[in-house]
Amino acid sequence: MEDALIYQYATPSALVKKAGKEELFLSKYSEIQKNTDAPCFFWGNVKEPFIMARCLITLSNIVKSSFNLSPFQLALLKDPIVTAGNGRVRFEGFSHCAGVYARVDVLPDGLDGEFLENGTTNVDFNQPMLTALGGIRQSEQVMLSIGQKEVGLHMDGGKVIERKVPLPTKWIKGLSTVQIYLSKAEKVHTFNRIQTQQLFRGIPKGQVKTDYYLITRGNMPMFSPIKSANGICVGGLHRLRLLEPLLPYIDKMQVFPHPTMQSTTWQLYFGNLRFSFSVSRDVWRGFSGEGAALESLIDDVSDEWIDALDKYAYANQAFNPTMFALEENMAFDTVDNLTGRLAAMGLLGFDLDENQFFYRRLPFKLNRIMSLNPRLKNAEKLIENGKIEIISNANGRIEARVEGSGVRHTVILDSDNERCTCDWFSKYQGERGLCKHVLAVKKIIARG
Image (cartoon, rainbow, N blue to C red; front, side):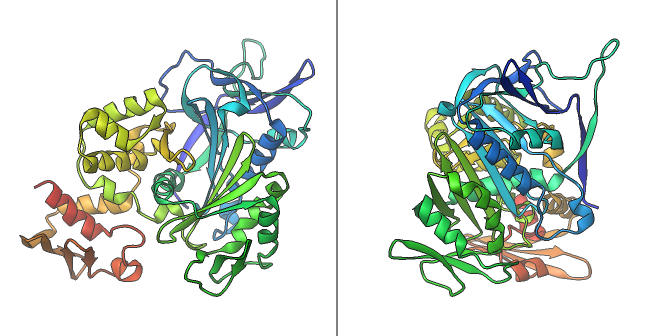
């Protein structure tokens, strides 16, 4: 069974009716807390509650879905993550297999309330709350509270309800990788509601096992099994059906592919709400195993730097690497490395429309988050056990030998790329991040 972080909620989430109004309370859990005095992070009205409810139900369906796991693993339900800050509320989640990432953004003009504190929590999406969300009508007024305000069960002297829920570590690892993919993605297409609905009607029935390509003919988008020079490759096309319940309500859809098609992001727009939906290159590839963040973890960065940038991003609730480099008179490469490291820790998400990172404080301690990458840990072990021999280092070319199990691997680093003779590199050719041997050699060179 996969590793899991066990946590508990003090109270369940609930949708409560008061004086003709409905109030949504989302229970939270956190190992860390920047401001323990705040009763909740946000409290106020949602201007488009019906659309928000539809989006949250779709997000929950994504969280409960899987495209490559067993029925036993499917029985373990997971809880989305919610971030309040910078005048907006964001809900995030992964499918069980971590190959689908989704986010609901309620934008500032869609909220009428008060941000009492910026922060991130894990949300308890229990069935009664989902049932209540499904009953919200267009004309109703809904109050949204993120955190714990006044919901609980009371007996003599009070009572606390505990809900133990497993949070898979692949979620935390996936959050780092998907943000790096998003930061490199660029908008290619914008489709209106009718175009989007026509496009989705062309998705083949059943499980799609071959690649399809998003192409346009005239002003009509379509999916084709035939590779096209300008087509956007989509693996596991049937995963897009999770968006179908939302299509009747959208204003438009935009498509953001990764430059090398390692992911595609489909962003739906509903007035003052957005729904982002990212799928990995293939059904069997979860974002948690991609290793895109490994490059950012090679250079050793002091705890003081990480803490300083954590506080900077927390204070601003957004992070623009270019502006930070100019303000602090730092080299762009250094800031890019620090940005990648913060994203790898789960502290930064990425907003495609604003083209900048947003701050997201995962509710787990940094040392727990940093201990989750096995390739990085294995690289450190190779270094500690003296398994690395640098053969040459001149003219921008490095050659090294790395001792493995009964075999010695050759690692070559030059200005063009990195190469290794191990099976991992032979299989993936660097598409899923660095192998442990290349990581170990790079870390040794970085340490001088």
